[in-house]
Image (cartoon, rainbow, N blue to C red; front, side):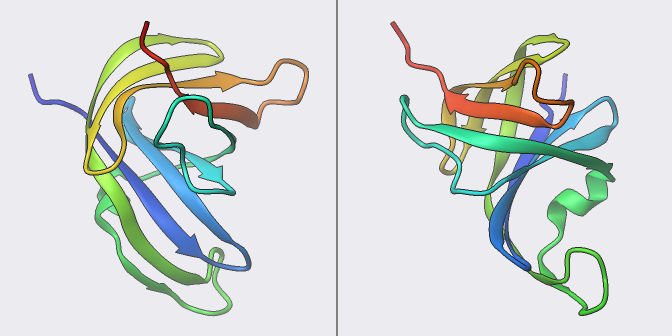
Amino acid sequence: MKMPKFVVHKHKATRLHYDFRLELDRVAKSWAVPKQPPLKPGIRRLAVRVSDHSISYMKFEGEIPEGTYGAGTVKIWDKGTFKLIDKKPGKIVIEMKGEKMKGEYCLIKFPRSGPKNWLLFKVKKK
């Protein structure tokens, strides 16, 4: 079975942020992460859920033209495959095999903060 892919775009738009995308349910599920995604356990990052993108967009690098939503420079910061360990409403646990992001990561939805705010962190192994 083919491993699903992930990509993290470094996106210099109005503000620099990172677009964290997972190939799930035949789309690129996407979160905007205001600071660099964590590479070590103990670092937590806000991840704001944004609209799904086409899986083909995961390969994109380049300029989004001025006057267009997301205008600015998009570069691939990290990419690779992942294994889905657990997925339920408000929680996704994955084993990432990227160039930078390696190991088990968790996305968990903030309770009572609306549907968009999640927390992204690397899981510390026991």
